[in-house]
Image (cartoon, rainbow, N blue to C red; front, side, top):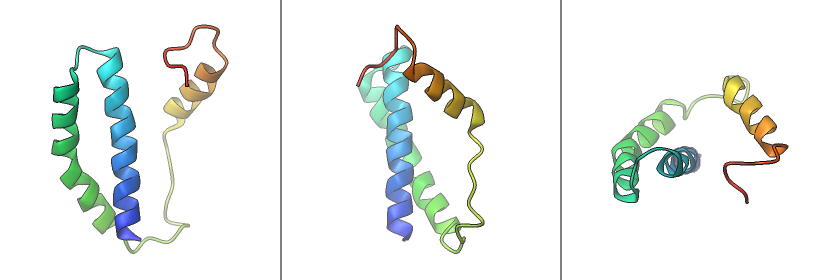
Length: 81
């Protein structure tokens, strides 16, 4: 399960960095450098959370979740996919 958690975290970070590359003056090379810098953190967090049960795991990203829900219905959206 630990490699799966690490890959999930890498995917989340990759999405956030990709968004930053499009929204702020952050080039693709710098974005890749950020991901490379954060990769050890993904592995560390995956190792630290390896023994958790589903009941132990929670998410508290309320503001970003609400923003994502609002973004879905906007006439002019930042990213269309």
